[in-house]
Each structure stands twice: as structure tokens, then as C-alpha cells.
Amino acid sequence: MEQLIFGVSDFVAYLNQTLETAYPYITIEGELSNLRVSKNRWVYFDLKDENSSVKFFGTVYSLPGPLEDGMVVRVSGNPRLHNLYGFSVNVQTITPVGEGALRRAADLLAAKLQAEGLFAPERKRFLPYPPARIALITAGESAAYADFMKILNARWRGVAVDHYDVQVQGEPAVPQIVAAIAAANAQAEVPDVLVLTRGGGSVDDLAVFSTEQVTRAVATSRVPTLVAIGHEIDISLSELAADQRASTPSNAAELLTPDRTVVLQQLELTRTDLNEALVRIVAHRKDWLDQQRSELNRGLRLAYQAAQFRVQALRQLLEAYNPTAALQRGYALVHSGGTLVRQVAQMKVGDTVTVTLSDGSATATITGKEQG
Image 1 (spheres, rainbow, N blue to C red):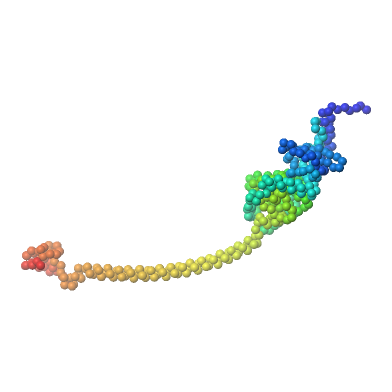
Image 2: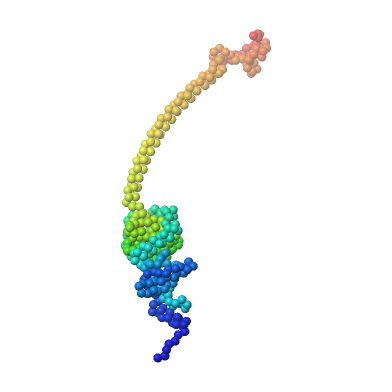
């Protein structure tokens, strides 16, 4: 049999072709060791068990958050033989495995994000109440979606809901949720609030909501966020980064909307109060108008009486100044040449004058005069 001889580069290329055909994408679970980050970009580590160790290479973007040696993780990627550095697996995703590893990874990430201020209370925004449009990110076939929509429609109608159907656990969940948050923020008609929710589950099931990618996407959303993951005792990092947290999907709908039955009762009470207040106001204004009418009538009577007194006084004054009245008292008016004679000096002996009395006039000739 003829011996098959490869050049070094040919062997590397041939082996990589074989790997691409036989094992294009693999997932390996093991204990993390020799974890190191180079130039804040490249990640190197090994996975090991009691008997073996495999090298891995990737970028910091594949990290779900801070990790440390000793954690059990599940890594998916592409096996490759490098021309210079030997065999390794090019990392696509890294997922902590087991409750202990998941909690430790969440604790490390929480400490990192806490130091950055992502959970600070002063970052929290108020949610519109009730919102006119909601971006709902959850699995469309889930109980969480059904519960949220049932409570929302029962409590308050007329809210538009833009549903983003995503997986809420497993490897595809993280990029789908991050993409849905970005899409909701990019809508032409921006929603009033973004709701990210799912029902309860194991620590593994809920782990995607404590990844760095999802937590940062929630924290940086320009649309105010409400996150409700699992049950009341389950608190994910994305809930800590959200503007508000709800204990369950149903509780999320309750926090966003009032109960229309209660609102209608309150409106009925308000209508009754307004009617009673209106009756009181009308009665008060009627009393005030009656009082004003009485005061106006009294004022008019006083003004009329004062006017009467003034007219009487003026009449008496006019009567006092009326020359006819003086004539009736025995006085006379003397005119000479059409001019009223006021002094004896105005007349000469022989002048003809007209004497006006109360009942007529007479003509007389001056035969003599005497000045006092």
C-alpha cells in the first residue's frame, strides 16, 4: 500500500476540511481553567475533566459575563487546527452550567455592573400610566404571553401591543432578545414601555436574563423598561437594570394599567360628587343673586329718594329765582326803550316807561324822580 505523505500546511488544511465535514459545530462541557484575556479583545482558556484538557480561543464578545477558573461551563464552537498554535476550538457561545456556576457567574457580573452604576436608583425612569403602546418581548406560545395579554385586556382596553416572539431559554435566546430590544427601540412609532417577560423555571432556564448582553440591552434601552422574569423569588440581573420590576407576567400587566372596573366606579363617584357640588354652587349663587337683588333694590330706592329730594330743592330754588313770583309779591319791572331799568339815573323826566306787574303791563310818563 502506497504511503500517504502530506506537507505540514496541506495536512492542516486537510484535517480542517475533515473537521468541517464531520464536526462543523460542537458543544463541550467541562471545568474552566487558565482563563485569560489579551488586549481586552481575545479570550483564551481550557476546559478539563479528570483525564483531558482542550484549548479554546475566542473574543470577549462571546463571554456571557465575568467568569473564573473552576466554574463548569458549556462551550459551543468550531474545532480547528491552527497552522502555528495547534488544535483549539473557536468559541461561539459560553454558558455556565449548574446552579453553583450560574449563581457565581451572576454574582461576578452583578458586581461588575453594579460598579458601573447600571443598577443605580437614579437611573430609573417612570413608566407611562397607562401606556398607549407596549413592546412585548416573550415567547408567543408561552403561558407568560397568555397571562400578560389576558390581564391587560381584562383591566384596560385600547392599548396597542407590538409582540416580539423570541425564545426565552437556550442558546438562541440571548441574541434574539437583544435583537428584539434593539428593534423595539428603532420603531418609527416608538412604544411607551418595553416589557420583557417569561414564566418561572429552573436556574438554567432563567440564566439568559442574567447574561451581560441582555442586561446591558435592557439598561441602555431608550424606551422605559419593565422586566418580569419567573416568580416573585426569582430576580435576574435584567430586572435589576430595568426601570421597574414585576414579580410575574400578570403582575406586569397590573402595574401598567388600572382596573377599568375600579376606574368606572371612581368615575361614578366623581360624577355624583360633581353633581352635588354643582347643586351647592347653584344654590349658593342663587342666594347671592337674591342678596344682590335686594341690595340693588334698596340702593335704587335710596337713589330715587335722593333724586326726589334734589329735584324738590331745585324746584324751590327755581321758584325763588322766578321773576313772576317776585311780581306776585308786589314787585314790578320797569323798561325804558326796551331796557330794564335798574337805577333812577337811567330815566329822565318826560321819558315813557313800561311797567310790568304780575297780571299785565302799563305805560307811564316820568314827571319827576328822586334819587335815594
